[in-house]
Image (cartoon, rainbow, N blue to C red; front, side):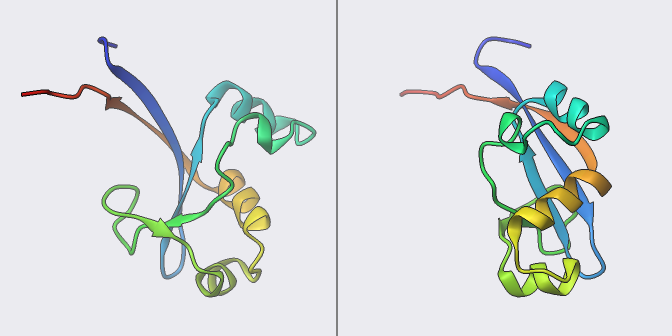
Length: 104
């Protein structure tokens, strides 16, 4: 990885109508959680928010998922419950993100 870059990991869940994302800060702790649910989610997630990509897969623009879209897909409006389902059933994707800013 070059200077000014970091990695960003997200869990992508392909739903019946929408695609959902949850961002993961610590991949190693997430992997531990997969086999040991006693690991608190707060140890690897800092933003307890579900995003939807408007059927664009794991890429493209994304917005906060509404309670209505959570209820339609996960039978709950509770974001924490939806996050757990996404983490359990989604697929992880990691990409490099550039933090380089060009000044003129």
